[in-house]
Length: 118
Image (spheres, rainbow, N blue to C red):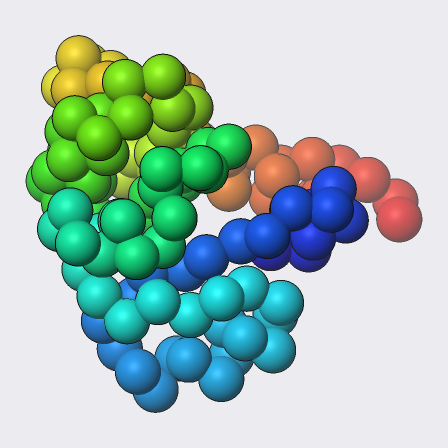
């Protein structure tokens, strides 16, 4: 959220858990109560004028978010977390623009941090 705000853009977070609303707004994002797999929630979050969408659910739910978002915005940049790399091809075929393999990314960061004296 910080890098989005620093770029001068607004950020909406679609979340079902209302107990997270304060944390989301404190981070500078707009809390939208809903389910990212639903057209209504994506519309409420402003998908019609969004620059990009990112999804960080489990892989099957990410797939549904991607397909739903892609039907609303064929031109939208969609970045998805992928937990199991075996889902990568399916997420890309569903319409993800870019994937971030969470365990590979975290592993690379941990290794780099371990090797850095700072």
